[in-house]
Image (cartoon, rainbow, N blue to C red; front, side, top):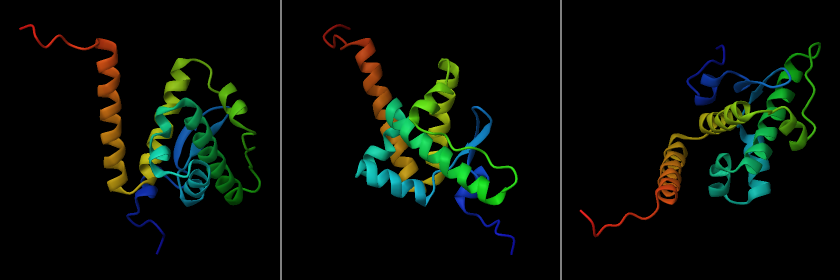
Length: 147
């Protein structure tokens, strides 16, 4: 057996979702990252909402990047990549709105790839509700008395 079963996390590759920062890196949402997130946030809903909050996304993104980097380094002892030091170091690698938006999307992708299907549906429902609330704020209340 080659270990290439139909597990959902294998679709993203062994090291997770690729992202180019200072070098090509990966983001993986696995049990180690989930455990660290639960320890930090205490609540699964807060973890699932994290990619909507830039500070939380940086924290969780850093966990995912460093977990994937540690996995890479274990498999490639002669071609090790340095870990990112902290969120500030990560933030310096995310210059410009395009890079920030790409990062936020990669955090989302990595989290969704690492979650069971029911949780993905819950996250997508939360996203729809957040977008609807944001739309309502920007358009303001509609005058329902006019036709």
